[in-house]
Amino acid sequence: MRRAFADTLCEIARDDPHIVLMTADLGFMVLERFSESYPDRFINVGVAEANMIGLATGLASCGYVPYVYSIATFASMRGYEQIRNGPVLHNLPVRIVGVGGGFEYGHAGITHHALEDLGIARVQPGLTVVAPADHAQAAAAIRETRDVPGPVYFRIGKRDDYVLPGLDGRFRLGRTETVREGCDLLIITLGAISSEAMAAAEKLAEDGIEACVTVVSSLRPAPAEDLAAQLREFDLALTVEEHYVDCGLGSLVAEVSAEQGSGCRVVRCGVGRMTAACDGEACLRERNGLSGEGLYQTAVTALGKQSL
Image 1: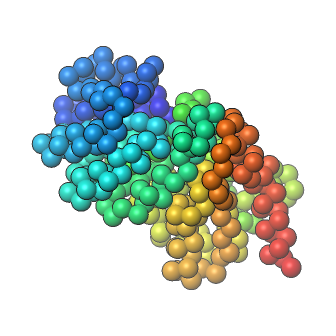
Image 2: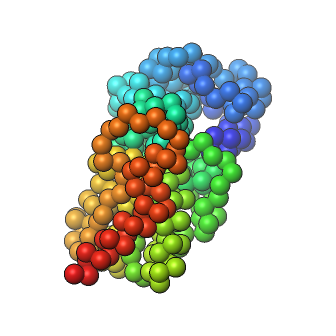
């Protein structure tokens, strides 16, 4: 998704001289097209994420639309107070781009595992929160949000070679996108982990269990109406996210289910606690039950318990 972000930003910057791209000494081999095309609108602030947010806030207050780019843990947390006190409280169009959600920087260790970024972003009123599922949807999300008047937090993945079947690059703020139909259970997912959710659904189908798979790429504004309508149709829903189970997608779905009185049981699949494990993304997903096989087993168990 990184290259899709950079290429799409170049396209919209061609027609909008107010767009600025800032990086905290990251994005090499990704951001060069923008830096070479618009050198006067590209700023590398060095390893200084909090200062980057401060600079972006100043630029936004003067009419610019700055996109600030860093690894998701650094983008969301090193400048969190500045995000809150700057673009959020003043409703300024700063775009915070966090790269590598969940375990995508696996071997770099827990400091680089973004497992709380969506939760701390979602709690800030007025901050649009977007987590595309593949690079085609990431490009659509950048275009769709270009005119949002307030701040936006993007969690984008590292892969540019995967397309989620059935999504076709669709993105709408405040809406869900169903990528697979089914009637036995509902799987709600977001971000790059959507590929594992789809793998689980395909394995369930081999057992004659048809899962409906829905992608939530807009956490704020939340797709509450779409979720409520789907939750009313199912007795069981699994939420799948490469994030702590608290405060992210699972919490959002549970909130909607409770407030709407859907009666649907919600099983949250995510990371239960912090671990110091340093390993590849696939291994870390497997350890936390977030591989296609692990999600399949969770679904089968949940359906069995429900039928007792």
